[in-house]
Image (cartoon, rainbow, N blue to C red):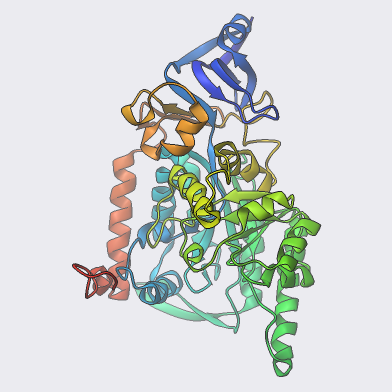
Length: 479
């Protein structure tokens, strides 16, 4: 009998392994940061004696969920502008470029990672910024503060950093000696900062924190007289893609639509290490380019872009393209709860086709686990419960009225569960939450810090008016 650190026993184990085994009375044995056995409880218990045992009766045991697209910073700007997207985008651009400090990025990273943890998401992608393509890479301090914040919570994070959209230079501000100092930042400075973050932070926190590179999405509908702009895009895109390949980090883009994937192939940006977000209203050439280059797609069914157009998820899957799920969280109006996004995905595409057979529940769960791991190039480490993989495990409490009866667990998880049903979370073999109690950090301290930094940010930009509800908020069909 082998002695292991942790044994989770007696649960319904949804493995997501190649056979997609669902073990009614199953167990997972963990030694250090890795799984050493998965199987029926009686068999695993015969071979493993654990220093700690978790009783998973009446619980589903499954791999941690993976959120392949979200934005750092957004956790502290939820619903600003009160539903006016233009106001929100303008405010976020101002906040991220001149109204934020490293303390802001650290507090937001902790809050968002805590939200993910409590909802059973053990790995998440976070772009270091957002809004109108504002990436906070004028210097490495903001990115490092974000990485430190996530590492302290204990989940996995892929931090996407890259340049803003041209023209350059861009104006950023830092708080120095009691005053704000504005400075112009060139494209070359942003590229240099991204390389510094890779060198300092990629693989940090025992490998839980990784860096990916990003570059703004561009279309090629510019007229011939603007050829110089296209040439500049080609040069800048090549600089980031060359860096991603040289440093062996992932490459991602936010906001593809209607021909832009095919153009990205022309720019040499695609490949099996690339994952592209939103991807609405794709053309046949877009889908062919993704298939031809083994590029991965991230679908964000709750995002505003998914209101404006549809990501053709079933068509992509049938073409052989890997499709993962993302929250696009957590602002302006959506959460990091991947159970909500699985449910939204399911009904979003069934409504489009008027066909309840579209996207079986099992496929949707794959999109938030093993397919998501594949999109990030991490399928050998996470995304399923298999011996040898990292021990990222969540337990869902099924003994609740909305999740009863205790049968058909995959259906229960995808159709009825929510983040609040997550009971226990293990990442890298470490129990970060047990019985809904987070063990890695003081939750109250994290939330108080987030509130304090939000108020300081609003004071810096004189943004208190962003909290007011709009006209026609009550009693009308639209703003």
